[in-house]
Amino acid sequence: MALDKRIWMHFDLLPFVFIITLLVVSFLLIFESSTVLSLKPVSYS
Image 1 (cartoon, rainbow, N blue to C red):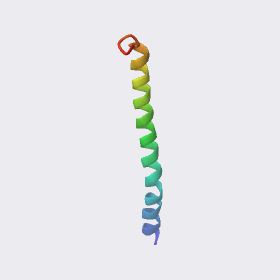
Image 2: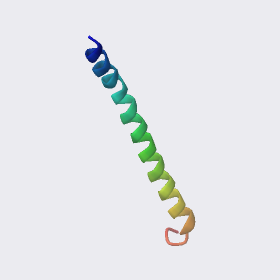
Image 3: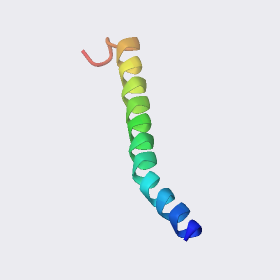
Image 4: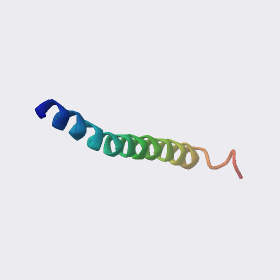
């Protein structure tokens, strides 16, 4: 029973970890693109 409980706890945490990683990756991508745009605004105008 204890093993089953641990496995279920891990399964409950999986979606949260997935969402957090997605948020971090998207934030990094947006941050990088925004810094690139702010560094080179002339090439896009």
